[in-house]
Length: 143
Image 1 (cartoon, rainbow, N blue to C red):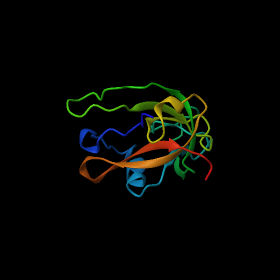
Image 2 (image 1 turned 90 degrees about the vertical axis):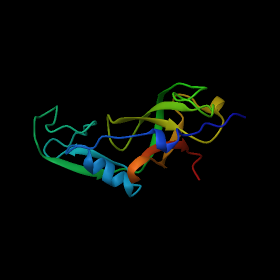
Image 3 (image 1 turned 120 degrees about the vertical axis):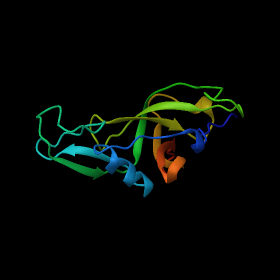
Image 4 (image 1 turned 30 degrees about the vertical axis):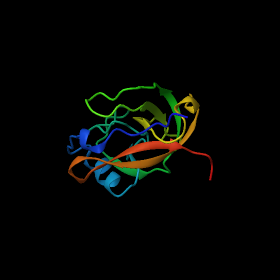
């Protein structure tokens, strides 16, 4: 079995701005949130100053369950930086309780051979630089 791992947090840096700050502040608290238009109620990710559907500036940050499904993935056998060699699995995760929202992340834990489109996953958290956390996903066996 070859276990998927997260990229070490010291290699990950984020940029926070007015639109993305609520997402990252919630992530620090290990809460997954997504922006929803306060007028037409459609989710928009990434966060934008105006709703792409109705142009409203109104925004509500909705806490999500953290459950998802692998929409797409790839298996990388070597990280994009020098040092220890290990496999990691970048994924695009659909979030069913935020219609239309997909996150780019990683799957961790479990055998990389078991990752597949449609695989049920749940959010986990990877500490990164400057005290932030980034959402990653692990297999959801329904426990």
